Image 1 (cartoon, one colour):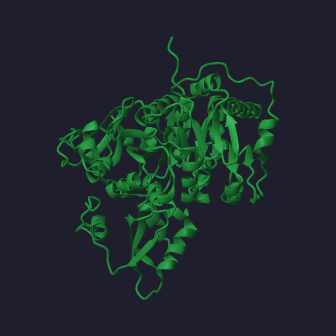
Image 2 (cartoon, one colour; image 1 turned 90 degrees about the vertical axis):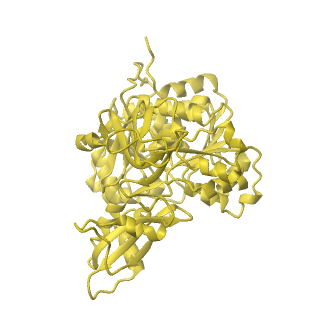
Image 3 (cartoon, helix red, strand yellow; image 1 turned 135 degrees about the vertical axis):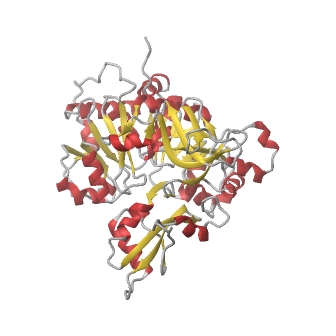
Length: 530
């Protein structure tokens, strides 16, 4: 009889074989795998005592702390489903997600309770559990996290039956390219296989010390929350991205592995402390999001000695589907040539299934680095669908293939390279921003006649939203007023950082907006234009 593939097995294995090894470092706190396992079990028992049952949904809004790690295991090992929340979202988005996800309980960090306070009367949560944070107070009627797990009924036993590998593990919400977030349903099996890819392709070892630079709520930390435990490595938590502190942690804990968006790489290499940081090991760093510039990869390897590994994926694919495999023959190339290769998305992963680029007729494009097509994938890591949204699920998954919406070419060696984003999605600092959503907010401004939002290059964030606006006749409004207006209506990271007023917007004869013409000014010579 086969054993189901679930990441929960890795927590059990780690406690069994590495009980005294440090599992988690969170600032001044450290927990061995035995201690971590006990805390996870206490959380599970407390949830069961509260009436949580298999398939119930629990929303979690926490930064990268040991509490967040405990939630992933403590919720999912009892067959309940975790709904990780992006704490940077607006109150309106959070209200929609908590309601739409049918979450019964919210576990929230005290620092990020303000938007929940605004919408509390609109929610029908059975319980709120608050992780206290020094220097912050909340008016939410919640239960202290430590008290909640401390008073768990020890007479409550953990479920003994096996978890079905095809049941849901998490529902991860993504803004995608529409205003309403989509709930991506990810299974135990999909996360297991994604983490297996993480272990294999990132060369994960038992002695690795992993820094959680990437927010864990992003596609379950790209699999790091599971993979590090699987190998018996050490998790190092990072509450917020602070380059000098990250560089300090490199020295303090001998970090050997981390993941993050290109913007994090950029922040690290440009920090004044970077060149003086004494890094004794050569850390591997996986990066994904907006395609990193080859020059940035070159800097990261030269200044910090990082071994950069470019990966590609989406929340809908758990997330990895492509990996930039490094071949020995590349070593003979110059550093600049190597960086160009490392900026490509790469080839399909070992444990996923199949990924390729197809033209509009559904045929695979020629491996010539020229023919443009859409990246599609099928196999072990593709989502079950969008929660309570069969129409959008049917649009995304056709004949068993998930259509990513990303346009790419395939090079003669089989390596895939993204050329453009099919739906004008802006990826700023690893966060997805829908240009149509921002435009929708702009059109609420009484002085805005027409608006177009595009991605423009940004040294810090990779890309940033720019609003190009036609005003109503005889009105006066400043650029800062537009930005402030948007920030009052949506999450700040989604609001435009640049504004330009124009007389008219370029359109086709049928009135369709030609965004590529707006991009030409900012992306001249780049594949982002077309």
